[in-house]
Length: 366
Image (cartoon, rainbow, N blue to C red; front, side, top):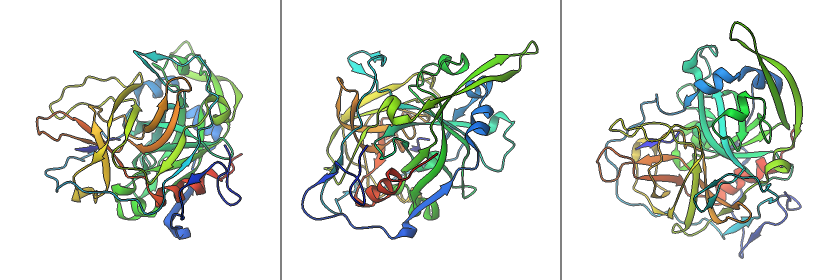
């Protein structure tokens, strides 16, 4: 297996519903928040059409295979179940794939590896992600390994989110339908950042208001920025998925993402240029000591690297193209050992996940 690479309470979210009781509060140090290194204009100008085309899935080059796992584990709630409703308001122009209306909230994130020459293609990486409900309509949910480099112990550089990414044409033709959103603040759980514990492989990113950029190709083939305009807030443009935690480990979910990496046998069925989806019922996954995994939930799906960070959505509605974020694509599994990935899994979302989410969902950005 491999890691696949709004309204508020008086002191939190309005619209949050729970059963009796309350989830345990995290200590302030348990949520790691860091400012992004690049300004909006720096990041958006960095990602020229050529670099966007050349970006590779984030985990394909990493040594993340696992030999052997433990027995099935059982994730358990640490408090009452809770929900935050979706923002809603997605436009009716979403693409369709068979009977499933693909959500505009889902897209690709692009970033560069810290400490490497950003002009080299080996530094250009991508994952999947989704817009999620937040007070200031500025929140993106993804996997922690899509924001933080555990080999260098720092967050990624030049991080941007392109919602409703579709074959790239809207980016390099200067016609992004909903804009490009640059990270301002990363929010993750300390146990991932410090311990590399994939039971906490989730992150919430506050983004600046969106920008649209038009590129001009020079006679020598180089691309140069021609015009940059304001696109508005992420949640106003594409809506935001709801959020839910402390649910049953057995839930019917849709997963969305942009897989691109090969299976262990070398077969490469995906390109990463278009959004794909899986549907199934989650269940407890085995332990994986190398990644400290003890409480993952997963289901049958053949996604490969590149789908990392894409959402697992509970109670997803075709009509509104919205549901409740109950997980994020974290690890791909070959459970029958035939060199083909057949399951994907997510950390179990509990009260600790909610606390990281709540801190991010209340954070204002410029």
